[in-house]
Length: 398
Image (cartoon, rainbow, N blue to C red; front, side):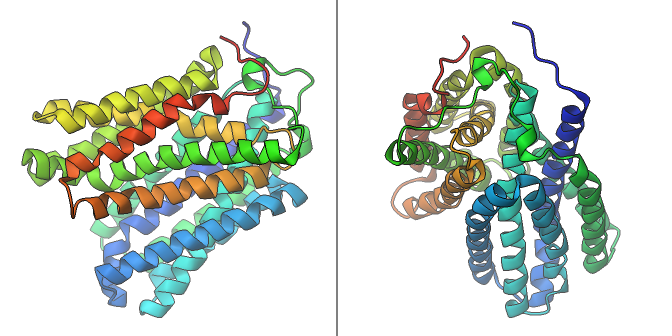
C-alpha cells in the first residue's frame, strides 16, 4: 500500500504541532528540575509539596474538562494558542512564590494551563493526523519526551551555573510564548482536516447510532487509558526504589531502572507510527500490552539486575505506542466533538497516572513492593484482552 503524501500546509502544521508538544514537555521539565530550590525558597515540606502536586493535578483535570467543549466550539487551534500562553506564563509563578499559599496558587494556575494544553494539542494532533491520512500521533508524543529531556538538561545547567531561578523561568516563559506565537498561524483549522478518502487504518469512525453507544465507547477508551497510564505512573515513581529494595542495588544503579524504561518508551514512540500504519491500532495496543506484561513479570521474578533492567525496558517499550492509539481513537469517534471526547478519556487516564503510584504505596504497607507490581501486571493484561476498543468501525488494514 502506498503511503499518502501530505500537502505543504499539512506538513507545516505537523511541524507546528511538534513544536507545541515539545514546548509542553519542556515546561513540565522546567518545573520539575526546580522543585528543590522552590521548596527551599518557600519553606514547603515534602508532605505539603505532595498535597500541592495533587492540587496541580486536580487543576489540570479541570483544565482538560473545560478545554474540550471550548475547543469543539471555537476550534482546537485557538485553544492551543490560549492554553500554551497560559501554561508558559504560569511556569514563572512557582519561581516567584514566597510561601506555601502563593506556591499553591501558582501550581494551580500552571496545572490548569497544562491540562488545557494537553487536550487542545492532542485534538490538533488528531486533525493533522487525519489530514496526513496515515498514523503520526506517536511521533508527537515522542517530541513531548524530547522537550522534557531538553528542559531537564537546560534546567540542570542553569542551576549548576547559579542562575537565579526567576530569571531562568522568565526566559523559559518568554521563549515558549514566542514559539507559540510563531506556531499558531501554522496549525490547521479543524475544518481542514478531513480528506476525501482515508485509508482504513487511519479512518474516522462513523458517528455512533445513539448516545448510549457513544458513551459506552468513550467509557471503554477511558478505562483502557486509565490502566495504561496507571502502569506508566507506577514505573515513573517506583522503578528505582524497586531495584534498590528488591535487589539491593546502589542509588546510581537503581536509577538505571527508570532510565531503561524512559529510553525504551521514547524509542518505541519513534517507531510506533510505522507499526500502526502497517498493522493497525489494535495490534499496537494488544501486542504492546503483551510485551509490557512480559516486562512486569520479569521484574517480579528477577533476582538479577540486568534481567530487571530488561524488564523495565520491555515495560516501557510495550506501553510506548498505546496512549497515542487511544487518543487517536477518542478523537475519531465521528461525533463532531473530538475535543470533548478526548477530554473525557484524557482526564480519566490522568487519574490512572495519579492513582497507580498511590495504590502501590498503600499496598507496600501490607506486601513487598515487588509483589505489589501484580497490580500493573493485571492492568496491562486487561488492556491486552480489550484492545479491540481502539479499532475504527471499519476493519483495520492488516
